[in-house]
Structure formats: C-alpha cells, structure tokens
Length: 352
View 1 (cartoon, rainbow, N blue to C red):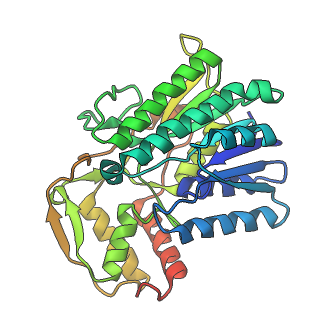
View 2 (cartoon, rainbow, N blue to C red; view 1 turned 60 degrees about the vertical axis):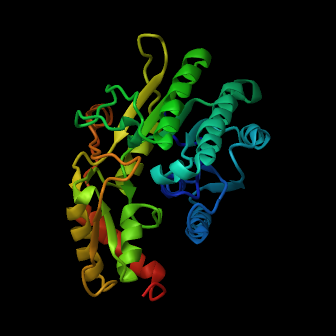
C-alpha cells in the first residue's frame, strides 16, 4: 500500500521515533499529509520536543514537501482522539505515543496505565469506528511495542515466535498488553495491525533518559557513570535511521491473513548485534573525545543489577529481512559519532 496521497496520523510526533518518522513522511512529497499528535509532557526536557516540532514545521513549509498538522493533547482524552479521526480521516495510523522507560514505571505506574493502556485503547476504538466516520476508514494500524516484552528470556536471539509471558517491569507488561489488545481488535473488527518491537533506539535528538544521553551529560559534568550488573550487560543498539527504514517499509504492507483470518504481524527492529555495556561506554567516550565535547575518559561506578533491568537484548530480524529485504546495519561507532556531532552543535558550550 503506497503512502502517496494518504493521510497518516502519527501519535507521539514530538517524541524521538515519532519525530523522525513524521520528518521522513513529509520529505516524500506534497501528496502525503501528516497529522502529528503529542501531549508534549515534561517526562524529559521539553525543549528537545519543541525543537523537533520546529523542524517538522520547517520541513512541511520548505520546498512544498507536504502538509503537517499538529494536535497537542493526551490519548487518554477519548473525545479529542475521536475528533482528530473524524476531522482528518487518516488512512494509516502509526501509534508511537507511550510512556517509556523501565525504571520510571517502578515509581510512576499510573502514567503507564494511562498512556499505554487507556491511550492505546482509545486509538483502537477510533480505528474500529473509523469505518462509520469516513469512507474506507483506517486501512492499517502500526503500533510500537518494545524489546522489553522479552523480559528475562534466556533464549537468544529473541524471536517474535518466543513466549513472552513473564515481564519484569510494568512498562513491559503494558507493551505486551498492547499486543494482545491489538490482536483481539484485529480479530473482532477486521483492522489490519502490525506491531513493532523496537530494540534500544538511539541517535541525534534522542531521549535524555536513555543511557547514551545520560552518560554523555555525566561525562561532560565530570560525574561518575553508574554501570549496573558490574558492566556485564548487553544491548542491541539500533540507530534511528534503521528504525525509520523499518517502520516506513512496514507501513506500506498490510499483513496477510493468518490461519484465523486476522491481518496481524509482529516484527523485531534491532541491529541484531548486542554490544557489551562496557564496550559501548568506550565507544561513546571515543566519539565525544573526537568532537572535543570531553577532554578525558570518565570514571565508572560498577553496581549490582537494577530492579526491572534485563541482562541482554538481542533481536532476531529474519522476518523483517525476509518480508522487506532490509536489515539494520549502522554500526555503533558510526551512529554514536553522528550523535556526538549533533550534541556538540545543539548544546554548544551550554553543558561545558
């Protein structure tokens, strides 16, 4: 299904992945209309979200690349969600809005229930009723899940065929719940659905609560870096361009029916190359040193495993490769180098 001539609703448009996806769509040409939806909350530095929205507005207005409409609001507001669907009539919906973060979910569980359960339910309901509200209705719903659903699975790499019944954080539990809700709505109401399990997305304009960003800030400020499980942890870091390549491909292919007649599919989007946390810090420091952001390597504080953390993430991306012929390929050194260049440009001497 081509995105040309389509209206695409992107929730979480001021967020990291939502911003990059919206920008990509706007750059495809004037026939693509993007409706961005975001609460622009203060979970992290709002100035980053405002900068992303500024860039989207600039992109939409430059060289007649397309139309961008932004709606500020909360997915928990059902009336607002319904009104957005009725007014803009999106044919494709990409639900990226969510309360992210494993550790934050331990102390602020209500935020996850509101955004990830109630908010997603309102999106599903709007997709369900879209057939009544406008001709054709929503033709494809793509939604964000997370590698966190794999919990403490011992089998690697993680496959979408693995059982994921033992989440180790509330965040993971809400994302698994989203997958179940999506399948049931696909079965009951015939809505084509695709879920995407993202593996540690990173890059310029990223989230300050992510390790690479918070480590950078600590290094700049001369503070110790806290490394959990004494450094014996591995993460499948996925550069943002590879994430967007996967999302854009998935958007344009409605899933085939499964054995129960449900048009539903799950994909992992990860680099499929887990990196040691200690090696990751070494590479990050090297990139920051090369850009002159720091003058020396930092001190490390090795600590036990934190509650809610997992030992390793490792994506099996064979389904993505088989169905779309793509495979995330940006190396950690290349991705962190691009991030460091952006960090220097964006913050300048502010954090020095």
